[in-house]
Length: 368
Image 1 (cartoon, rainbow, N blue to C red):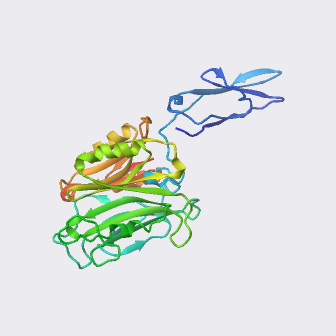
Image 2 (tube, helix red, strand yellow):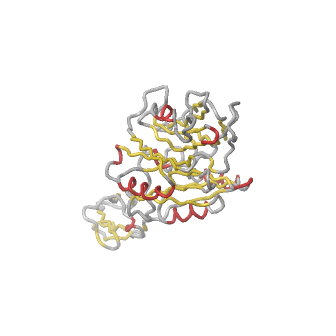
Image 3 (cartoon, helix red, strand yellow):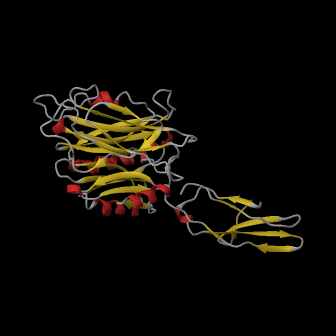
């Protein structure tokens, strides 16, 4: 949806003329051996295109070509959609499957030009009471390196901190839940960056964020300003706030529960000034999450954020779609290594990872 389809025909003869038709009706000015449609709407799906080729000897009609229009793809460089249709995933990952990297509860890490999956969403591995030996929480990623020829390099990075780190969440005594240094990690990020994973662990004085950005931290990033909106709300207020933000053009890209509240990050983008969105926040147990994700995809939503409620153990899945774009989206939920490999080679982007309770199976959500 929103892209053009191209048709062409090959014919042999002299002084040939061409006339293309859609559903049997001639298309004005479509009189060469190739025809490119205007940007396709979902209502164009199933339209039949054909061409008649003529010269003084007569005319002959081509076979029919039927157009299939699938759900809208995110715009190039729109980092808000968990790498769906990005250069690194659109043609499949093939052998470029990265490694799982476990980040301890402190320090920072930078990975060479690559993209990364969201955090695992599942039972926390954080100590309670907090420990300061550097072992605290662990956050897992899969790093997918870009091919050397990738036109738009992206970077994945993450911070994790305790009260002894520069990038720390410091819960002031007597004021549990206040994020003293949280903005120190968020504010320096490039305007060409989008945070796509967030985990706040109040009981352990720890947090982690991960983001993707255009360009490299060691060079000037490409100009693609994203504007960050940060909200911390009671769980019962999330749906209304998210809906209002989506209607104003914001896309939620990361979500986490911190104690009794829920924090989410949303972004607007100067390359997307006119689009308005609809959002659905599904809450489910880890076991129910695959069915909830399938329902979102069937209604046209891309999963743009996933997070965990520490209080209830429930999973938040945030689905975002262009307003009125209800075309079902392709979704693969993989739980075995062979299913994961098949999804990666088919060009699907990993939009969420949900770990089952008590060592249950982990579900990987892939969209394209």
